[in-house]
Length: 268
Image (cartoon, rainbow, N blue to C red; front, side, top):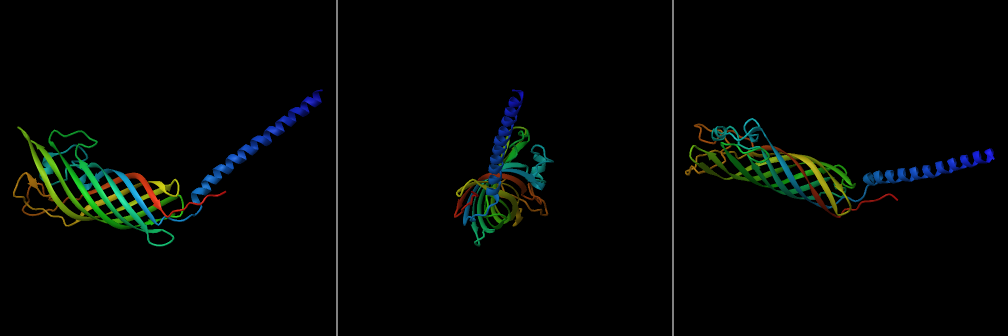
């Protein structure tokens, strides 16, 4: 009796081991299959529409007053733009220049907003804000255009219209300023990746460095003290609000893509 019981116990243990090993094998197969689906080549998209939202962090002269609140004296004396943080949006079209799809021509439009009291508290000395409207044209290299996971690097030439407004505190009241439209040329560089959920839709994530006023800096007096120019060039004799200032910032962005002409392949 004891021998039969022992034999039955061994049989149950053996069968259980076989069953669980089969389950583990099936799970391993599914996991391996999913990984393979990320790297199996398909057909690269002919055209990609990208929509992204940005969070901006100003650098150099767009880093406010030593990274603290708005400083009226620094702004009036042209030491910086008076603000640092901002947000924005982009709509971009990416057209593959050859069948493999690595090299893409990029045309993009941007709207960005920077505010001295965005993220940080308002300064008792006043506030300033800027709007930027940019059109850009550039090139981008997609390292895996025919796969689901698509890292890329690129750069663009930018033409930008910058305007804004400021409010300076005085002993009795607020002195409001309008910053008139200024046209500038600059560039950006970026690195990011896309992940395609299917043949039509995916997400994007990346970082970007932008310098909007590399060329066409200018400073000149305005006939109306309440309407001033951007004044981002150092001149002699000095005038209020003028100085050698760089509209330079880093950005983190994320959004979604719409693909045209893409086909992902799956392993069986």
